[in-house]
Image (cartoon, rainbow, N blue to C red; front, side, top):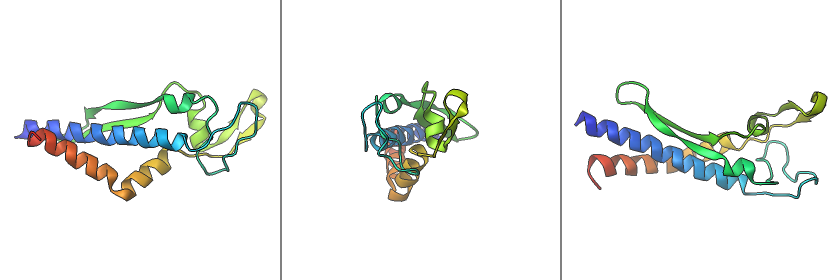
Length: 134
């Protein structure tokens, strides 16, 4: 039974990470603009897409065990140097002459998914599918 519960917990963590990945990618697809034009994305809102690189590099990190019957998985951008500064804001550019306001896209997406109950829903479905063979 404990082995099935562990497999179910890993499946639940993975399902939540995949749902977060899909949500983050949807958030990053809301606005776009042509290269070289000012962003239509106001400070505090997700960044507007230019190339789509940030959106296409959102990945799921496979569930791993972090204690007794506890599994953690994650989703977020990988291999995009500007991913963090878009989320948090900061100083960038040649000579650090540009200040970028935060344009969060990961945290608001996860908050929205939690509030909607969607993360809980997909985790329960995944857990039950493994534990009960559904």
